[in-house]
Length: 363
Image (cartoon, rainbow, N blue to C red; front, side, top):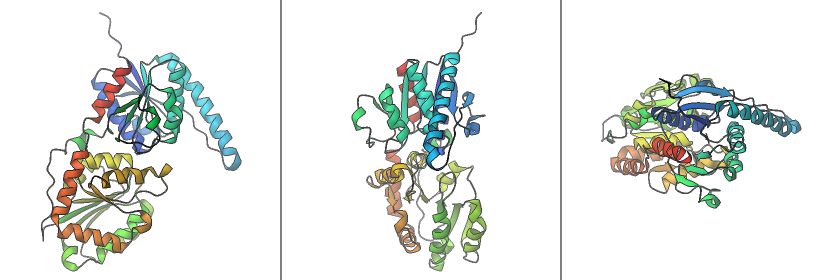
């Protein structure tokens, strides 16, 4: 009896968390549907190596120059990667190619287009990324995480609303109700800054919390992510504050952290926003001001407009502002309960399935 070879799907992704987590979620979903998933990325592809559902990882070369040579070197690197991607397309004969954005996804999607392999894109943010803007005219479908995405208006005939896939461990806590902290009960504050942490939180948050009234400090249970270079200073800032603090470089248990949080303070990257909405946890978001095309601010404002989060721009995020909002949250549990309900309503736990259906539609 001849063994049936599974159909191969190529997912191409940049190496940052906003691209990686949705790609991993889709890989697992496609694997469960009987497909063989190959990832094309750059040197950061190690994160995909042992992931569930990924059968092969191909790291295409990327080059970076300096000064005036940078565009030339980058262009040459993309040409070489494109030619290598063509070779892999001929060898693997994939049934479809899906790009998640980031310049490392360009060679795979364009080579798939040249080979007349069905191609699609997924945009995780409220603004169509620059790489996706370059590629969107060549693809058949465009999956979007948001109802309205800037720069995607001219391609509505290709749009498929999918949401943004998140890890199954996050989906698992969606049905756990949000319970606000009542007066005199512990108030759990989760501070996260994306995959690398955020300097602004290490400087602002401890100062804001340590200046709270003593009764408020006694209620606080703080779990804060911190970059390695700021770890000692952040720990010292909380010293003798009377606040229960757990400071880590990275939270491996993000599902339980979100499950127990009464309020989340964080950036507004695509994965953070998706995980907050799926889990239904209220947030104070401080968008990273130097994100490409300021897409984090657009992500955050989409939540704020629905009443699911507070948004404070980094230039306005002072200890006094942080303290003001935290006191409001701790004194009136109805505020966070309402925000949690709004956030939960925005969650799309079936995003991976919708995205997989879009890919299967290409076949």
